[in-house]
Amino acid sequence: MTEKDWMDIAQYFYLTDERLQRFSNGFTMAVESALAGRDSSLRALKSYLPLPTGEEAGAYIALDFGGTNVRASRIRLLGNHCYIVEKKVSRPLKREGSYDYLSHDTTAVQLFDFIAALVGEAAGGNKPYKLGHTFSFAVSQQQVRDARLLQWSKEIAVAGVEGEEVNELLRLALRRGGLDKIEPVALLNDTTAVLLASSYQHGKSQLAVICGTGFNICYYEPSQQMILSLEAGNYTGAEQTIWDVRVDAESRRPGCHQLEKMVGGAYLNNVFRNIAMTYFNTTEIPFFTTQDMNGIIMTENMKDVRLRMGRMWKRLVPPEDVRPLRNLGAAVFVRAAQLSGAACFGVLRHLYPDGDIPRQTLAVEGSVLEHVRGGLLMMEDALRACQSGYGKSRSQSIPAEPSVIKDGPSVGAAIAAAMSSAT
Image 1: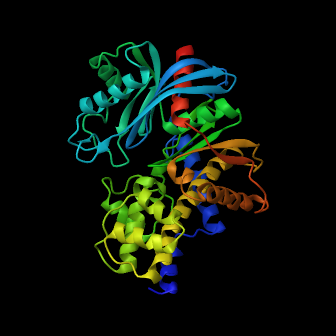
Image 2: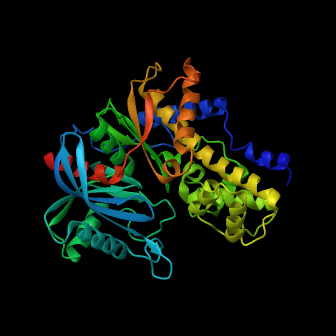
């Protein structure tokens, strides 16, 4: 394939300032439609949580169920914007040749018994703790203590959970596991948890984004005095390429979570795989992970990159194809970061319609933005591109500075437990 040919593919993943601004403006309109109860691909799901004071204190158990891994932690909030993670345990929900708690063959009891055992390990046995639970899937929620799962995403299909109260399932599993002194008192989206953690530590945070396995944005809505989750992965206003359409068609839920399939780590590998099939004019490229894909981008030596590609795709990759393919993989990551930034600016435009954004931390979490080289820089570049559409200089730094929030979902869960216990 010539340089012109691979650039014919790459051009679909390089977003101009104008395209980013158009995407961002559409996102703003979808946010405001959701708030007004009009038809929108976004939601405005209530968390029933305001921003914290930064003075919350005590020891809590945090459960982070954000994707295909589950983490349980014991966290001590010290007040004065400080905390300590006293213990942390993590398990994948699927281990090849051992177990699979992701499939439709798994029951709700099996899944939550597995999670309860993890909670018990973090707590050090059956000890009295309040538990905050970050659960990053679409839910129907009327109060902070629990919520009903509306629909699985991120390729999870466990039977018997959709339509049920999630913390009640956990509470029953804890009881079955002899851990009845541990009480789930808060359920929140992981993006909400990241915003709580950022606000607890930094004070000035209105907005959080997670771009890891999946994708979501939440923000503090002053008119409702609480944090709202947008379920941003559902947004349908992004321009899909033919490779995005193929990934959507191959997924468990075609037509759902359209933006998430363009930016989330659960899908970027398949976008790149479909690009590689086009590049080689074949239908036989083996599956690989987004982590494998990132390994290609992070490796500097082209000979090593070629070896990685050969092992990953089980084919001999001609030397002249190595750099173009590596650049195409990078372009997929760049687009994900750009769309994340443009979507965040869409929310900022709703919050500050006059364009005068006060200085604050834009809370960030997730492997695609944290661990992919240049992820945060490209996100910030997209924010600047969108800002330039409002009379600001392209070179002017944006007041909402993207910052990775360490242990965000877990610390936020502990904060939610503290806030819930205080009411």
